[in-house]
Image 1: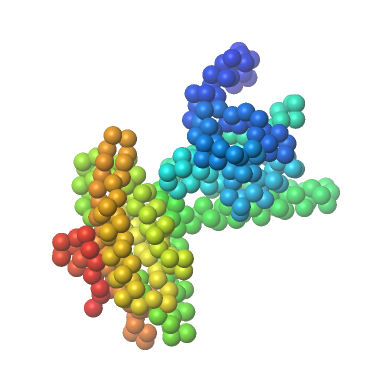
Image 2: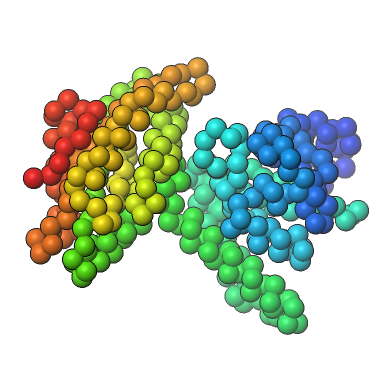
Length: 322
């Protein structure tokens, strides 16, 4: 690597920055944008008036960004970042590299695979362990390290609960949410309904177009579900091409109305992936919690049976549990 660095010229670096997929930007120590490559330009077009790196980050992530810029905190961190303005933000692996003239190089690379996210989790966990055993020399250093350690631990926890393909919460997390909601409904005698959502004929999509196209279909469906449910509701990837929606304080009628709307919305959506256009539909099973009769797993079973009834009835629709 040292020999490679010695032979690369300034012109070579410019060419490299313009051809790599990673977003690269030169910023001042306060985050002011100075220059960037073509990959970063796609993000900049979404926020044309943005003159500072802070303007491109969600409010919840700006404190971490400020801490790293102000205190020169090293290391990678994961953050949701807008890439093209047409879909949900994507998780990116970000890093700051100080330059001798006081400027800072910001690099962000998109993470899409299970392997990339797993590596990020492992790297974050290693950072946590290092912070836990590292000696603290001054109060200021201790305070800065504590701030970054807490941020890293929060990120590690978030990544561990996120499905790496759809960026919805994963099966373990959505089942835990369901268990909590069932306990709450039992205790306070409140209403609760759930919907199991299945993408129709998904195997045919994979067989016809290939698994990468199938993955993009799942990502787009997940995005539509997340953006279309009301705020108190929770959606997660239950497994394969199935999703679980939890509707607190809702009866089966409200869940059925939501199911009708989701079926229509997905039916009218064309998923564009490169030269492919893919149409998909949904089959949804709706079930309302019966206090004193249901547990969380029997509620799931009833919704699952209803979903299969919807498929038997011709797909592209919903059915309510008996």
